[in-house]
Length: 134
Image (cartoon, rainbow, N blue to C red; front, side, top):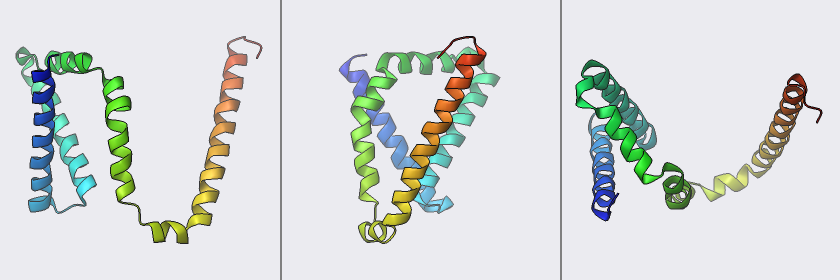
């Protein structure tokens, strides 16, 4: 994928996000994040429906080819994750976070411990069910 293709893809994504944001602001009036996710979901479902009804367009193959070329893991984890985390951090109310620090700390700690125990136990049981002595 050449630089033109990457720039074209980025332009298409930004333009689509702006158009979807306008649709949400003008007609849906949902919170920004929820509105964008809902419109993106509906657009994806519409694209799948069009591909099912008119398979000769080759829409699925075109999208699959673009996703293979851009390297989704590299793009998401090394290119976009920092921006997404920064954007999420901009919406954190520090005063509210400090007021709820004990509840947040307890939920984070208990949730992490519970997740670790559940995954560990299921892994242990799964390996034994498959005949491996772990």
